[in-house]
Length: 245
Image (cartoon, rainbow, N blue to C red; front, side, top):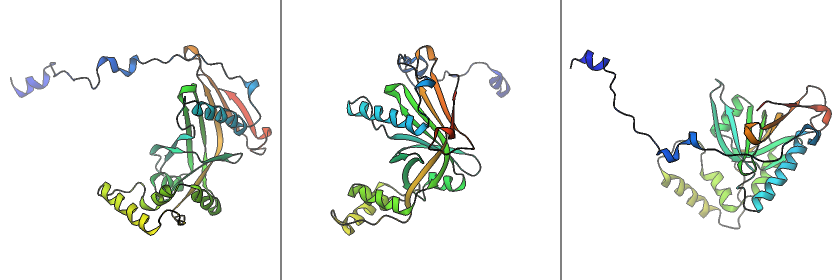
């Protein structure tokens, strides 16, 4: 067979499946039967509604039905608009927004410095719920960072120093050696200073969507939208719209 004939041949080797048919993701189905979410049930501000759902998520976690209710996916983009996402732990929320802590030299921190727009996603799958936040990120004050850092377990404090987050390292040994050196320098019981390159971000919300799974994929999606006028901690500062699922 000539090269030209071989190239034109419709016969090609079969592509083996990556997963067996029993693990086909297209065949997976979850049927939602939860009660719905109505506009009349919502309080005036999204942080009040978040507090209601987060309290219920905590109760589900205490019952063993949900893992890490404060876990959220943080999505950022660099100056060119290239996105990236990762899961972090929310460490505080109030009427000003949602707070998490990180190394300020990490990828997400660098991207938030270049482009402060961010999105958060709380994936409470066992409750058939999710909360989606969009807004802008700002650094929290140093006093707030130090206060939280001192509340962390000793090992986590050392880890903040040992890890040059998002940088390439030669291997696990490099990280373990850095941690061991710090553990020798700051033994258990001795105060570890907060790293100058480590701190918090607060995502100030512009929209907050509450998603409740419903039967037949006709989910409830209610989104608070911050208005240009009115304070963020008052109902006059927000409107609510329903999105088609």
